[in-house]
Image 1 (cartoon, rainbow, N blue to C red):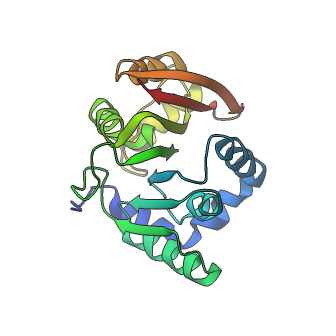
Image 2 (image 1 turned 90 degrees about the vertical axis):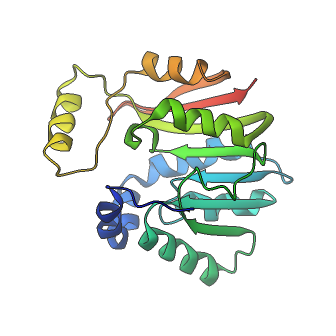
Length: 209
């Protein structure tokens, strides 16, 4: 079940303008969608971890059997539900919760998505362990994460802003650190690709061993 997260209020406040802000990089969003769709199948059951307003979940619902979207922000979830209802999408279910919700069963998903979320979690090894547990053998974890590096100017600036509380807590990774964390959780990394040089945003496709 859902437990209140200290960053939940930030995302609740951001919910109303989230889509407008995200679609400023429409090209990047389309690229993520197209690359993700290549790994999806009609019979797949997908979990969208940190689904926000359902931008990706609603799009991929047409290509899979079922999508479960989850987010810690109730307002994000409400927007996602409203959009799905208006579009008549019946194979997507949104829940205000965390990835540790007991309703998500071991080996219950073919694919888990984690778009722009890994740098925002406090305990990434435990999160990755949970993702691994929820995936079926051979299942895929598809993520996009900014890997700025701790010594980059942008990385240092964001770290400082985070520490003083203007934005949620975030972790600054470089690509090799993130890949090692994923690999150490018994994943095989199938593909790594920089999808946007600005912000050093990396798509990683990992398969459960």
